[in-house]
Image (cartoon, rainbow, N blue to C red; front, side, top):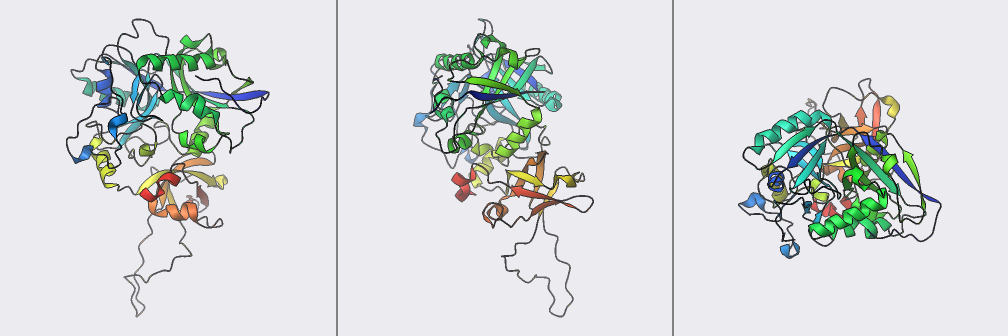
Amino acid sequence: MKAVTIARRFNHATLQYASNKKSFLKIRGPEAPKFLNGLVTSKLLPAFTKKNLTTINPHQEDKNNQLELDFDETHSNWGVFNEMGYNGSYISRFGTYTGILNSKGRLLTDTLLYPSPLCHGTKKSMAWPEYLLEFDPSIGSTLNKMLDLHVLTSKVKTKLYEGGFTSWDMRILLPGLQAEDENPWISNVLEPSTMTKNPQDAQAFAAGLASALFQGNEAQVIAMYIERRTDQLIEADGSMGQQFRVVTKNGVDLKSILNPQGFPFEFKLEEVDPAFFRRLRFEQGYVDSVQDYTAESLLPLELNFDFLPNAVSADKGCYIGQELTARTFATGILRKRLVPVTLFNPENYPLPQGKQYPDISMEPDPNETRKPSANSNPFGNTKTPKRQRPAGSLIASEGNKGVAMLRIEHFKRAFHSEEDDKPFYIATEDGKRIGIIPSQPFWLLDHEEDL
């Protein structure tokens, strides 16, 4: 890890942290990478076979830059393969964001998949590939049964941990930076973390970052995730902080092991409520485990997995739920996507409880010329018009921040209409309205023509 540099020296940076209640599944054994590659949406091994149209990626790039593993991935705890980085594919000891689908292609849960331990393992722990899957405790038994069903003769062992580990959200805000500045996290952490092409370099970089944040206590860190879902936001905003997920054993207080070194300023530690990070991710436009949505109710591409680094692969071959996902890639047909929203008039709660996700309605567009209904009778006997279908649905909210599944046909009005045009709302059970104001998601500027 490079030394973090900024233009001027200031008194302190802010390091915010909060603990999460999470469960973990450990997968260990010589066939762990192969087993997980057939389970999750990410591509965890470089080889793939195009068996039919459902394994063809319409946006596939030249594969000349793909990494070829020149080591035996079955007999060492080498890390995780990532298909895409700033300079092609790479090996990492940091976690990767991915999903586990059911047989119909619906998201059973999203998850962080960590190589474990991060960098300070014993000879025994580093002898075989070992990974941790992190998820909400409510889905633990379902996920454990699913893995037991698919292990069969695979040379892996799995173990469910309902306790034993603590997951921590962490964000570091560097001082004195403006939005128009170049964000130091890109050149110091994000880009170099994707330059490691072999296990040795990956472990050395992980050890360097662990030392920069936890010097003297690196062995207390079981696993770590560098937040990659916000890469485009950081590239556009020089003042934006970098987020991490850190896994420790239960009983370890993150504050007691934090010992930042090599930074040209002091750190101010700030413990926040977990709801703070939940609001933050909603504002940034993504979800995190089934605490934010109902299992098996959404498609991974509806949650923008195709715009998140290494979250889903279109050409990796077979995995659970692959058929529908690959077909959607190939056809490009997707009617709705997740967007961040702000809830206006929160005093009008509670939200309606009749549906899994509350409907978002939309006022008629005053700029649209209404066409006569096909059912209109010129002699005055007019049939009742069909009820307008919802514009979307609210998936989750925390305070006045949330995420909503919005129909793509309404994106133009949601993000490019007049400032005083605020047509989206949720009708409450007592006849009031909760205003819904969508925010343009970070990925839309680069991909709007594809929708």
